[in-house]
Image 1 (cartoon, rainbow over the protein chains, first blue to last red):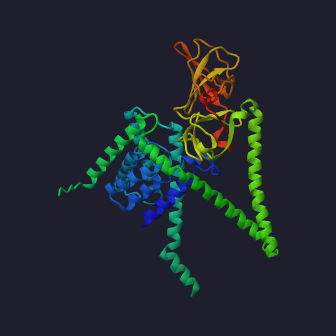
Image 2 (tube, helix red, strand yellow):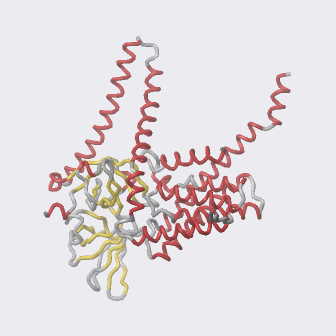
Image 3 (cartoon, rainbow over the protein chains, first blue to last red):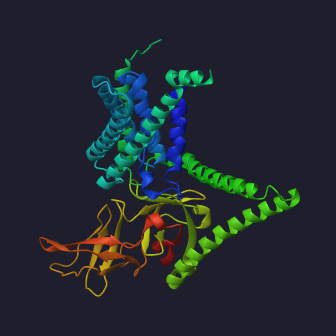
Length: 167
Length: 268
């Protein structure tokens, strides 16, 4: 349920970022990839890969790309992020930053390889990939900061402190 | 009845294989597969809806500010003021668009008769190198129609819906335009990408930096004489001169653009 809410928020953000009212470089951001990163926390590597596949297909739909490229990349990204997070026991901001960077790198590399094997041309060059990496990483940092603030707000220590103040 | 039990990881591999085949069908078909055409037709209302939601959000924010400013006024007067402000905002936006449009038309009077003004709804200038306009098939826009910005050629229309269209920018890796250098002989091909270059020029041609690059119209899409950009430092590869080009049009700043009739339609 929580993952679904994150997915809906990410879809809305993905639709809003290319808007003419938003600063142009932010259109390169892929908030939907953070859904895959979020899924890596609770699901198994194969489960995360399935989530990545679905998210990748959604990205293909939202960005007018051939349907399927993002799906394959998303599946690989899900597996890579999940396995890396488990192997190195990543938590907190490091989990989000490394996860988002790995997810973008895996999807971009896979898309490039698939297109290369099919003789197709990518719709962007290395600058687009770097912009995607930077903006998605920045968004992941923002999410990590928000999560930390939320956990601090909800912490039992803070609640006890407030209760003691009232006494 | 035969029942197939697949492990999750094998199923995932099969799904990826199916997606690979689907991607191959789409990548290798020049006009797009039936799947992409159907998905585009189904999906095109969604960006329009998103743009409408953006407008709605803007109106809501502005309306709230107006409400706070007029809380102390009489109710009837307050309603009237809110209505007038909303109208004023819409008119101001229209006026701004018209001013930009007028500037575009004034700069290109010879093309004004067969041009349509369009507003930019969304644009992605770094990754997909496309922008979406609020004019489509029902407004007379056609595939391959050249799109001009205030400073020069932006690109061409590559996908059409009834009330919107997608523009492939000149910075797209697949974009190309026949071009020549002002005051220099010969014709070349401007290739898009992160670093657009002019290739196919006559051997040993010396190109000074800052030379203007304009369209020739040979490719049958862009009318001749439109500004594409200016040259950087040229280099020689074998017999040929490769000239990097700084594109004149800035898609990130474009709010209103001019969509021309495709050259093929104009010549008919």
